[in-house]
Figure 1 (cartoon, rainbow, N blue to C red):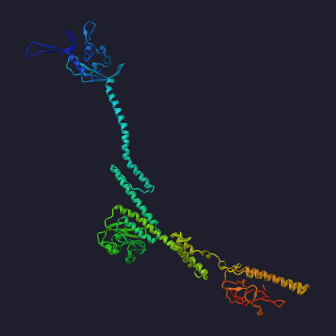
Figure 2: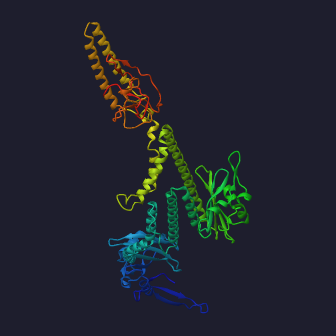
Length: 636
């Protein structure tokens, strides 16, 4: 086979094939084969409309090209012989660029040269490959593809994909938002429920359903949390609202029984030596009778020298002993040893397989204050046991607080009664006044509350009002404790520690002595004795009248069973004609509290020149102003 060349006869490019058969020496078979079919094949194999495929030799001579017309255009060499076109003068810009850019003779067999060349119009991707053909001269396949045409479909697909993506995004945004909202709506509702729980609002239960399993699980947990917290707060509030210790105990037991769905139970209080039954519930829900409760035995629970409790299953039962030892809630099947140790009445337990729940009650210091034994028909789950364990702390604290409040009230009542008794002891003549007033005040207030007509028809006292009335009645005279005795038992206006009317009387007597001394000096000076005596008598009479006025003003409104003194009387009057009763105005005054009525006192009297006894000391031995033993010295 020859290398491709231009046929002389038809001016077509082709190759000549010659063959000599071995059986016929001297015979040669030859044929000319045109490469025009190869050009047609190149036209069919074009990647893009402007793609260029050419078959060239090492010198760049083009033997095959899809443009057969361009290939058939002959060139003439210097000697006038027709020749094939080369890459540089083939008339295609990119092929001319390839002819300049690559040295074809330097390419080895199966070697491929690739480059990106540019023309004025476009960028081209060029590949030159050495074809492994057994011809006389090496041939090379040149392929050039326009970048614009090569990437046109990719760009069109990219634009289409972009628009499709944009359309998907535009459509998916609201769809995704709706789906996300549908998914997030239950979560938002749960978040709102969490905020409601943080605000302690438990008005509405959690009712939420979602097609997402995890959200449903979270909703169920949130609903259980809400109901648990609400129930815990309700029970705590109910317990804390009860002020009476006696009513608090059965209420505590009822709440604990309802929490675990128990049928019956017993509440014990610890007094330092044993657990004493305080209240019990029968299996029908009614409280155990008082006589049956009193017949229940105490559960012995001893402490050692260090204050550590020593439990014994034989004494407290297996369940309660275990709970006291572990200081935790214990739930297990009811054992016959529990019944023998606790000796529960038949109304508290049934002859059935039952579960026992032993709950120790510990205060803030971890000390035992009591215990509960609850009996149920079915075992309690872990959640109920945990809830009971948390609630038992609140119950213990409530019991301790109520016990302290009760003890404080008892101590306060004792102080009130002590003060009232001290007041009554200080004023024994009142005959237990401070003890009678609370009873009378209670009767009066009860009568006012019972009125259905009149001004007191709307009057009612609540529990706090009755307590205030009781304390006020007991303490109405508490001021007497610090008030001086002479103020509390003051008999006259001038009385302090003693009756100061005597000081006033002493001053008047001093004035009378001064008047008498002045009269004596005048007589020594030579004045008329009768005139001096007359002036002295007038002065004394004036002083007696003034003192009588003071004496009339001194007594108070009270009447005392004491010795009274009449200011215008003298007990040493010799003449019975002058004896007469005290005047109706009762111008006497008490000489002292609880003074003996027959305490006689010497009366200093003085005979005047007129033969009349002058009153010196108004001390009469009379009782309740009964002045029948005294006489008037002169008319007041």
